[in-house]
Length: 271
Image (cartoon, rainbow, N blue to C red; front, side, top):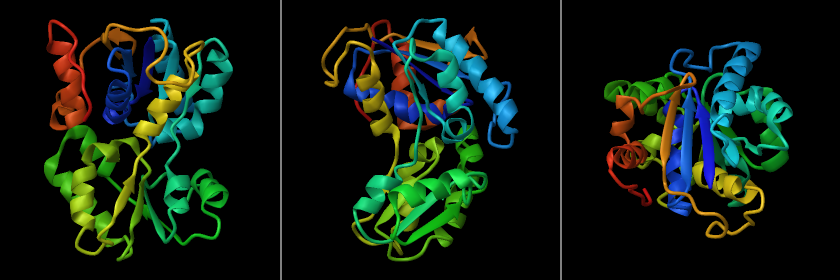
């Protein structure tokens, strides 16, 4: 089995690691856009063209499914990607985990990029999955960019600023950007002094990985069933064979993939 993941940068690491946790034998194709990142400030039309280029590069390697491991690209480009690639190649988008957070009961905070915070897309998800719940939208300017650069000081500053905007006493916080899952422990530590002791952070990586495996044609719903792969890792940078950026080594999910890429035989495991 071969699964492709696409993003402008390293936000896809969490979903890639989650896929290997569920299916250690799965082959992965990572397609990103270092020449065009970040995607957030781009117009929807420009972002869609760049996302299509990433998807086409990945599709050339004949994956069984494609994960759009970026919330912003899922908002603006998912329809175009599906129109071009499906039904031959299933395309799985990334949606913030608002539904399970709201279902747990109590107030919810959603950490997201400034472009997503307050957007019609996010407000639609809140109406659909958290109607009646007390929801606070928390913009996190600079956090995704700091994670992408592995800028420790900037990460801490952005997390501290977002934590200060988060109401005290919350037990449920949605991480509405794939990059944020790479620094989940630091977010938890920043929220801990004022949050509910039973604080839960809701990411999307594992749900997206499970959905990708379910969407593989003929593979069935069971993550352990179906055709085996060899655990190969292919990295594409703007369509060309490349390597994971050095920043990936700063995060456990990235270190897992880097170990696999460097090993003479595949290395797998959970994070």
